Every structure is written in structure tokens, then in C-alpha cells.
Amino acid sequence: MVKLTRNSSWDTRVKRLGELIPRERLHPAVVAWADGRPARERWAVAFSGGADSVCLLLLLLAHRWGGVSPQRRSSRLFALHFNHRLRGAASTADARYCRRVCRSLGVPFAAGAWTGAHSTGGEAGAREARFAYFHREMAARRVGVLWLGHQQDDVAETMLMRLTRGSGTAGLAAPRPLQIVPPDAGAHRGSGIRLRPLLTLKKTEILAALRQAGVPWREDATNRGGEFFRNRIRLDVLKRWIKASGRDALAGAGLSRDLLEEDDRALEAWTDAVCRITPAGRLDLDQLAGRPRAVVRRALHRWLLSEPRACVLSRRGFDALLAAVERRRPTRQSLGAHGFAVIEGKFLKFSKKSL
Image 1: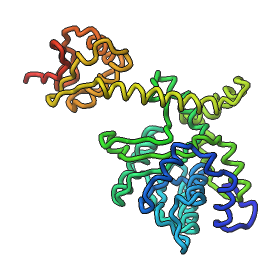
Image 2: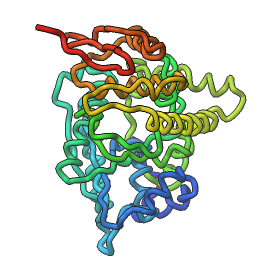
Image 3: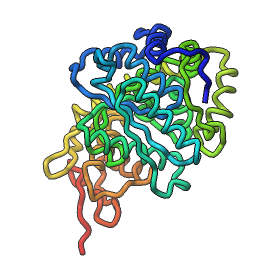
Image 4: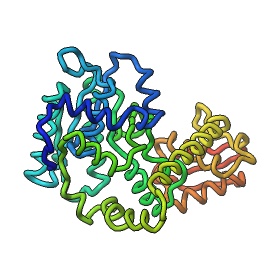
């Protein structure tokens, strides 16, 4: 844990941090969204106690998005902490620190803990457990907005990670400043709106501002280990990549993320215009004739997601079905134990297996 550099109140720290990181430094899409929301709308803030989440919570208060009343109690925000129970006493100390900070700030606080087989869950398991808890707490309070502390380093790390698995524009545009999660995204993901205003800031800028404002935070020792892929990217790759570039590579990654999101939205809009799935669940292939493969690919993804009886296709299986859709070739391809993808005439449909 970083020690306090001076004996200042939390009110003073909030004000000073807001001066060091004014609204103009935050992502403009998030600022515009927040400024246009009803004053009584309640928001959740993911609060781990690390530097990014502490900075986020204090900036929401500093820039008057916290709905602070004259009695210094937030009428809009509540903080959510999830204990992954990976670091023993240190994890418990994180939760205590977060509770103490929120009490000082007048922000309601709730904490949950991972009770499953977390030792083998890995990065994905930890993330799923965390967001499942957030979703439960937000649903109980009828809150649909979650603020997250991702910053510019996270953009570069995510981009490098996803390049290794061959992601397209949708994957490479993550994490998004304003993300709408649909209700059918899965139980562990929840639904609603996720906001990331710090994507325009580097980690070094956040740490420098916290130190100048005298703000303490918790350090997660697991971030210095090589067990997780993201840590290996951060510790072994990112610094060398930045040095080798000879320029502001993090800002470049942030700009690329913005441009990829623009392209992804354009492709989604195009797909909206031509993807026709009938009430009977058939995909109209006439509407896709002559369209770019990127659009046809998205339409096929949508059709597969709309069919609950279909299995998750391998990349090879998906590519085979995509090629058949493009050529309008009569096809009968297995979609798991329950049936087939069948192309007949102008339609792609799901056909149940006979018993």
C-alpha cells in the first residue's frame, strides 16, 4: 500500500485530484453521456482499491457526477468490491481499505467474495465471478450503469492479447469507453451500460496525479507475477514494445482502438440493414448476396446466436458454413447434438435431428 504523503482530508484529496485531472482529460464520449443523464439515476462503481479504481471514484465525486449532497453523502454512486481470495490476508486488507475509503467519502459500499474453486479459475474465471457478483448487486438495486477504471495501458494490453487469437474489429476495439451489454450476453456478464472514462489516461499519469493529491491505494502483488497472460504482456512485452516504437505507442494504441470502434459500428449498421431473420428463425440469404464477407460473417454470427439449439462452432466449422452461405450452396452441416444448419434455396435454417 502506498503511504500518505501528507495529512490531508478526503475532501481535499478529491478536490486536488479533480484539478490535476480535469473533465477535459477524460474520454469525451463518457463525459457527454454522463452530463446528459438524469440527476437521480444511480450508478455502480467497480472499486478494487487499486490506483485506477480509486482515481475513478474520486474523479466522479470531484466532477460532480457523484451527486454529493450537502451532508457529504453520495446520492447517486455506490461502490462494489469483489474479493477474489487469491492473496489471503492481503485480499482481506483490500476489502477493509475500500470500505474505509467509502465511509470517509460518504459512498455506500458492498463487498462480495469468490467462494468457488477459484484456484483453477484463471483470468477468465476470475472475471466471470467478479461480473456475476456485480450483476447480482446491481439487479438487486435496479441499477444498470457500471463505471470501470480501465486506462490507456489496458487498451494496449488487450489489443496485444487479442491479436494472438485473431480477433476482428469488435475484439480489437475493446475496452470501449461506452459499452452497451445486451440482456442476452450471459448471466455472468449481466446487462446495461459500462463506462470507462480513464481510457484517455496512461497508468503513469494516474499514479502521478494520485501521488500529488496525497491519495493512497492498494497494490496487488499478483500483478507482478507471470501466472496470467495479461501480466506477462504487461511485464515482458509492453515496455519493450513502447521502447522499440520510439514514439507514444500507448496513445497510438488508443487512437487505433477508437478507429476500430468506428469501423465496427459501421459494419454493425450495415449488418442491421441486410440481416433478415424470419419469425421462424430462417436467415434470408438474398439480402446478403454480393455483400462484403465482413457483413456476411456478422449476419451468420447473429443467426447462430439466435438459435439456442446450435452448438458453438469451431473456427474451421464456422468458416465452412460461411463459405457455404456466400455461395448459396445446398448444405447440411452439424450444429451439435440437436440438429443441422441447412441451406435450401434462399434460406439458412436449423433442422432438428430425427430421434
